[in-house]
Length: 262
Image (cartoon, rainbow, N blue to C red; front, side, top):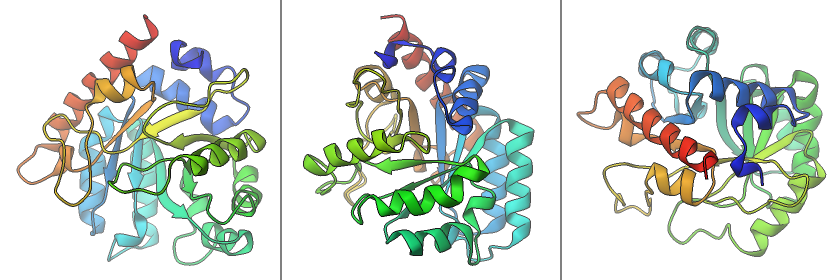
């Protein structure tokens, strides 16, 4: 079962070069923390990335909420990723037909494929969405996650939808390297997907708007997931992002060490 193996052991089994490099990075940096950087200004996003950079393996962006986006933002984020040794995940949640997502991924204002190591998609349109993104991303050594589950109350991404998503991931595992999910479930012989889990918090369980938070240990140790995604718990009002990032890094990493020692 891959959950019992170290990230470094698992890196040797991945055919996708970005997934392999990502697992190696996690082990090297002793971090399974991703910060969800949902900030609306270029300056704010760069400042946060620089503060949390030493403690994270992955910076998760929503680039389309940045009001003053320009190419310099991409250049600075790319430089910070090299400086602090993390990857960038544009949480685009593509959800259209194959030809449309090809253009959304490669072109337009954001040119996501040119700078984002990892992206993601809903499976609602069918497997054409994977084919379209794969056509753009695979030659650039990119990879993608599928949204198998979400952390919001009342989500429809569950049950048969989740099972179909897993089947599609198995079919295209040279490009689909994992899931956004609340627990590990695809563990057949030959499966080794990376599981990233949003809705992680150390200090509260709900925000009153449908978001539900789980503790890092519950996500990593109990549910077998690999990466904890934290947003407001790190940079919310009155918080010191560097201090909080270190706190979450330690909590996530300790849960991982406990898991592989089982």
